[in-house]
Structures are given as C-alpha cells and as structure tokens.
Image 1 (cartoon, chains in turn purple, orange):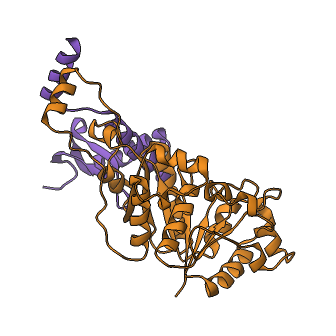
Image 2 (tube, chains in turn brown, cyan):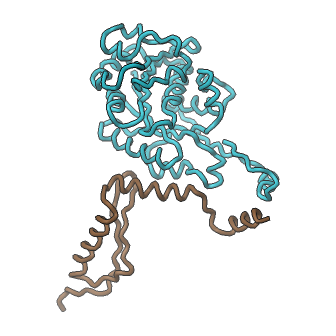
Length: 91
Length: 270
C-alpha cells in the first residue's frame, strides 16, 4: 500500500528520475572539462569582476547570477547583475 | 568513391567492436564490398565477434612491416559476399604502427573496397591517432551514461581538431523501459549535450550476447530487433533515410493500470 501511495505522490508531484541527476552532473562535468578552472578560481573571477563593476555601479549582490553555460559545444559565461543605482556618474 | 569510416568512443566497453562488425556486415548485406580493420593492436577482438578467429594467418602489423602481401592477410567472410577482415596483431603493441602506415594501407584498401571500417581502440593515445589518420569520417558510439557521454564529447573535440568532418552518433545499450521511467537519458537529452547528428539507436538486448557467443553478427539475424537496428544504420551510413525508433512500447491501458497498482512486476523490456 505504501508502494501505491508513493506512486500517487509521484504522479501528483514532479516526476524525478535519476536521469535528471545524470544530465545535471554531465553538464557540469563538460563545462569544467572545457574551461579547466577550479570552482575556487571561478569564485575569485566572480568577485574580481564584481569589484570592477562595483567601482561604477551599485550592485544588488543578492541578485547576482554568474553561470557557465554550454550550448552547441561552446561554453558561455552568462551573468546577470542587477544595478541599484549608478554611483560613479557625474550629475 | 570509396569511404573510410572510423568507429570510436573514447571510453572502452561501449560497443565499438560490436558496432564495427555489424556495420561492416550490414554494408556487405546491401551489396557493398567492405574491409573492416581491427586497429586494437595487442588486444584483438573483432575476429571473435565476427567468428573468424580460426582463419587468421597474417595480421595488420605483418602487412605494414612487409612480411606478407595485403591480400594474403585479408580474411573473406563466407556468409556474405564482399566482407573482409584485416585482423590486429595479438602479440605486438600500438607503437608498431604509425599514422602514415595507416594512411598508406587505407589508400590501398580503398582501391578495392567501397567501404573501409576501422574499429578504433579505447583511449585517445597512439591507437586512436592511428585509427583516425586515414579516416574520411567518424562514427561515435556512446551509451546513455555520464562517463560514456563525457568521453564522447572529448572525442568529438579531437575529431574537430584533426580536421575530420562532424561525426555521427550511435546510441548503444538503450533501454526504453528505463527511459520511460526517467531513469535513463533519452535521445533528446543526449543530443542536446553532444549536438551531433544521430545515426541510430541500438537497444540493449540479449541477442547481442547470444550473437557474440556464436560469432555470428546479429545483423545477419532477420528476426532480431538489434539486427534490424544495425541494418537501418548500414542504410543511413549510405544516405538512405530511415526513421530512428526509440523502442518505447505502448503497453496498453490494463497493463499500465496493473503495474501501477503493483499487481504486475514492471518488466525491464528493451
């Protein structure tokens, strides 16, 4: 009966098979195979880039997205940096 | 215009040799003359999969070193016209052959065959470099697993770096039952990641084991779904279009209901 209950909850909730884990791990692996940077180096790059942007713009650090993505065999660094206001601009 | 195709994968054990044997035999079944080369020097297996192991006299290395003529080393398959095997040496290693040797050999073979198929060894070292040296195009074999797809991606990059045209993909050991349960990556998942054209899907099926036991390539078996998959692949290699089935079964309402209720064990299926 527990089996039946589990199946009902499976149908109600999002279907999660182990293939999603496989795909997620694979995408991560391939990006890092190609970029050849450690997670630590990536973190450093992120903070250095944010530091530079921060000189000119006030950033909402909570909302920063910073991801490596892969499409058609090439890796792209995609970042979304929400700006609160322009700090360096002259009136 | 003869063509040389290398069957490669990076990872071992994904089915390169089985694919090479069945593609070569499948092409011969369509009336083409085909020479299949076992490039896995030191670990030859293609002769066993083809069931020709008792007929080997000379091998690839002996041809290259000039100890026999090319014609003497080729083993003609008696089950289908036009299929020939050039076996690997079992007691030598990969360094006995260079990429230039392979280029010369393939050039000679292309004069007397429509297709030259190369069964590439696992890895990306000397054996791989020898195997791709004389090839006009590559077919990459993978299975729906993280490690195999990762290696396939690496090989795609190496094919590009070696100026081969975009390779084609064969997905081997596909288990439709697991795909339907969400426990195996499906064709869209794999193609999204590897982004190369799909040549065919080969289901994981006991026929493969049985045919390997007997040394009788499954492509010769008219009743086998795996044999049919390889026959379609042999057609598609020649540019003859076929739908690529995903082997998903439509089990019918009552069977699904019973299985859902736990009254019937879920079958693995293919």
